[in-house]
Length: 631
Image (cartoon, rainbow, N blue to C red; front, side, top):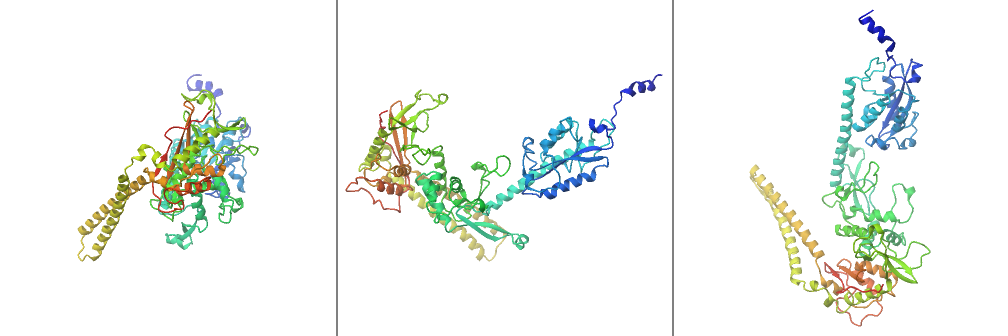
């Protein structure tokens, strides 16, 4: 026997029976059916109805399977298909619904069972490939892992064969169709996200609110601009100031900026009068605690909508970072104020800067430990010159000290190699002498730093004159623009060239006005930040005794003064720094008045009760030489 007959005789016993290549060991004993697992997924539960979507997907899959295929397992999830594969299938959203389809697990359970030798299935079917994943790389990875385990992944809307007797597990048309649909699925989601994002941006720029109005405002419903939606009663929301809550917001920002109180300290003050300061009510009223909390105050003081601008995208709403604050650069602001402002932008920025300064610091000078008895008056105000860290309070032999003890791995060059202590009483005595002489003393102006004493008063007057001139120019520009419109209204013979000239001139005036407004904002900011020694004249002339001063009052005074003490252990000196602002002068005067022990018979400068027409600017007061506390 030779030729083809000999080859067939040789190969015959060695041929592999591929008539049931898709079936595992258990299935070969019953070649009458093919075991199939159903893989389903529906989007997040707040976007779709899983009780309808999952059964519909299963019915679609049943409709395309041949009679020899039986679905023996059901795997599905209620989650976004754009998650990373490692994060998929770990949610519990399916427990919120009565879905009339048995569940054997999610996508992770499907993959785990597929790689086991005792798996119950040899084929996985889904309605379409986007149900496996909305991102191409994720759905392709799932497909690859299943194929590697000997499991075929098919989709109900793709051509497939379950009785393949050859080596091919899938056809070229099937591969092409799947890859195209994977790309389309990913494109569709990204396009929808882009359009949704652009829609929210436009919605915000037009001043409409998204979600529940923030504390301090209430919803002002207006008819929807689209007639069809307006006919259904759908409305859009603007914000208007709440008659009670608005005052609470202003008051809280004042405490934060002027006294630099912590969130919990502000909550404690608000809780003293819940009638005047009603606490916020969450979306679910059953979760209301009835009092102000740390998080309530933080949310109120960090919300930029109080500036009058509508702001969106402050928090992440998707993925593992849900409810995480986005960078400020990603916030979407309305270009112009959209509602009445409760605070100005400058106050909002100052309130956020307080958080940076107060990092890892408490408002109270006493420890949170209920058994603690010692009060550290200067806690959170003393910094180490060498390492920049705050010194913390500690008691030794019944005396209060401030200690700097960095870890060995974090000791910078020039820092003492060991822990050092500074006695509180010496610091308080030196600080009292400094404030009595250079802040509340009769010769404080003469003791100012030479650079401040030589400030030219003409420069300040020039700044004010420039602001007046800029405001006048803006008014004139607006008047010219109105005249152009008026000239167009009264013109008898109007041609296209005339209209074009009018529009070009209006564009020039608009650009010129924007430039003037920018210059005005810069000039006003320069005035606010310019050194102004005359602020000292608005403080009373009186000595104070910090050693005997009650702790609560002394800390309020220190915050209003923007006190900073920088201690250099190498030279054994502590340098004090006090910053006076036009916005905080009244608070300093009021607190000093409460702290006065022995007032001088005569006071220099304006009366302490002056509350209006205070000058702008700032002035920093430092001693000519550092204090020298004993250690």
